[in-house]
Length: 324
Image (cartoon, rainbow, N blue to C red; front, side, top):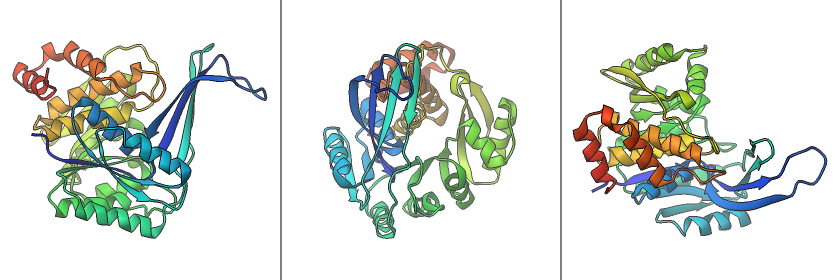
């Protein structure tokens, strides 16, 4: 049985995606094929876990008319939502694909401030809810303490839960300084920001090992975009390539990667094999347009494509978890 997972989204969004024939300045741009999805990193993680066959819990803020819309859309998913009523209206992000040039434009507002009482309510829910994995991901809203994820980590560690962290800047560094992280997933750029210098692939693996050896984190995945990803753990690090796919949209690739790993780990799969499903899910998200995230059938196809090179016992365990 899959262990209970809780995804935290302190700054969710309504993700609007659409297309336009071409995008030019000053003129009215007529858009088509509009889709409204629940968004924000924590929400996306819960959506992908559900898509892979899990039933995650989701702790999120929702405010104003847009917050009511967000709750309605989340209510249509097989996700157990725990909304916190926010004083500020939930943000709306906008993604437009220019069909003439094949380019995608993404507009991401910063969102409302989080009030102290709302943040305390989120921490209290983290104390009260039952979970064995907690996912802390995404940007922090305005007015949130910089050590917000460190505070959630402290609660989770006290409860014996495993923490999955996907953040950047002070939120990432403060949580790592606290320690107790089971898995962190910075991008190469986020790791460079953390260590204060540019890194090539081997240097990134070496820096990830330094963090692990300090006891800050048990496992680190460094995502490298089209170049795949690095997995570092106590025994060392290795690189795995990403499958070649036709790019549709980069929206949600990192969230899909994290969600697939959490889904795997919560089902008792090794971190190494979870890493390979994560790469497949991240690549599968790139195939889709707009804010669609990854499709289950694409994840399975890309996972199987490279599976012949790996331990067949671990692959069979993964496929059994995926019920195929």
